[in-house]
Length: 222
Image 1 (tube, one colour):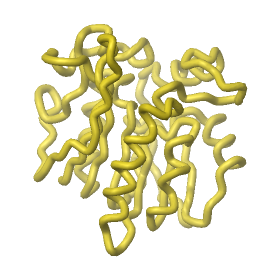
Image 2 (tube, helix red, strand yellow; image 1 turned 45 degrees about the horizontal axis):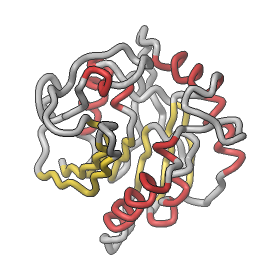
Image 3 (cartoon, one colour; image 1 turned 90 degrees about the horizontal axis):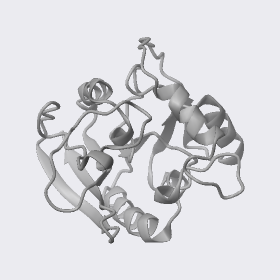
Image 4 (spheres, one colour; image 1 turned 60 degrees about the horizontal axis):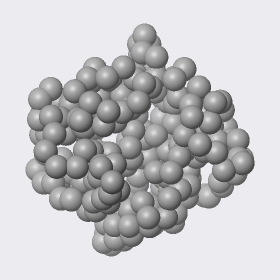
């Protein structure tokens, strides 16, 4: 599979070092592997409904879609979706994680790339998956990503949101928790992002109970 000529735009964001530290210090927990992307990628209560919803979407097409997974993490989720795609490009900002994934996961239609999704050009595919990634990023980084989302026909976006009413898109410093601690969460359709789409559909919402919020996956058609 050919790799596009990617242009890197250097930005002084702390995201790369912060994400490297997350894995080095097991800040999302551990399962006795070198890299662990946390309960959100491993808890069956969260993972199974998500996979069911995304598989249903991907298999609804006569001709399989090409997919880019932005923030693939330890690939516990992505490995279950590859077979339903024409080709699957999995991206993460942590270089050692990507190199580890290349060793563990091998499919003829699977490719891994190390990229900063806010600063770098992104692979061109039919569909992009962004699963609990934007919640970790500053608003300026999210704005840079949103501009690139217009290059895709479908976006499957998952975010951890507060239960009930909340003020969307409060800014944070990348890598220092998520907006939930500010009783906020990402909504791309409102200020300051104002993402314009033709269609939006909620694919699945997982209530975590005990005031821990809800993990919502939306499908956008651009």
